[in-house]
Image (cartoon, rainbow, N blue to C red; front, side, top):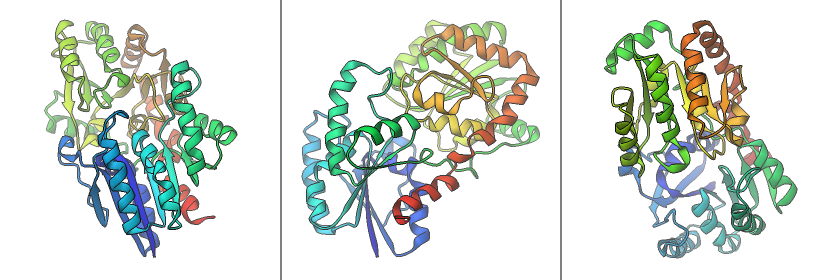
Length: 375
């Protein structure tokens, strides 16, 4: 009987990114799965954590300075003592740090500690401050990590070279290929009508929390030029977060109320992927880019800002385009290029799904199975 604890700063992280892991563990049978993270599901429009045997609401905070993390540390320490897990698999920056600080307690009971790095804060091109602050923390905590799992090639190469633990690489967290897939033009037209959009409206999708790092502001600014040339075009932004009011003000100041729509948090994001013609991703920093994979599986070329996560997925000129982050004019130019050239758009769309097959849940489940059970 294998007993596994999954930890993260917030429960939505486990819901959104670890279903392939749980599915793989369930397939082996005789596995008990617990989750310890702060309950933030009310913020996520009914997202449910219904695949764990037991869930513990611990007061983790995304702010490293918050005293709530001390409370979470104490509660997690007691939980590990009481439950005596075989594997403790931690995620997210704060959740990963706190969990590994408790790891000496876990080692007393024979537990192995796994950590999935969803994108180090230090990387080629990041600030000196990030290297001075975050790199020493991760290097030190690697001594308390049995297996470090990375989701992009740059992090994998760095960790293998510099850290004191076993390092593995998987192709992301696994996107559901049954949920995100291409549909016929007829199906897309019907879904478009059901969602309330005119048949002749051209739709572009941007996905991500409304946070400064996601940089949706660049996409909004690009729409000023796009709307001038293609008045029937609308940008849909899916996600919620503290930047909403600022983005709404930006939309109003540019007179784009009819060309940009903030959808909020979507539980049926696949519908929007399938009615849009292309996607944009403007993040300053990205570990890999789940939204990019979802878009490409749905047949949507992606115009994405240069960063290590996007660069690994987008083949410039084949399944999308890359642009320098923050360059709204460059983004607008690429959008207009695809909207004006139907044959180019279709050719890119046809190439998209095959370019990200390794990142589907079925593929990632096999990689995780090797890490957990393959020795």
